[in-house]
Length: 106
Image (cartoon, rainbow, N blue to C red):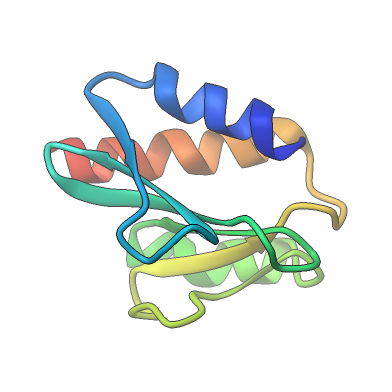
């Protein structure tokens, strides 16, 4: 999944807005004024930070040990970092983003 596809998907989620509060190298996606997705535009590999429930955080890291890691510069109990160019089914990437959005939207 490339950056433009990911951006388009995130912006199609209800009440989503895009901003760059951390500068031009990062896109932040928010709903109801709260961040649910952080996309690093310059890292190699491309990474995103996304929110998940604590019970799922560890399971995701164990299921995809080469692609999902503790949230970089985030609360590691609630956030994971995903490397997009490592093997991870696109359906899982979209599922994790949808879940992150729904957690914030509550």
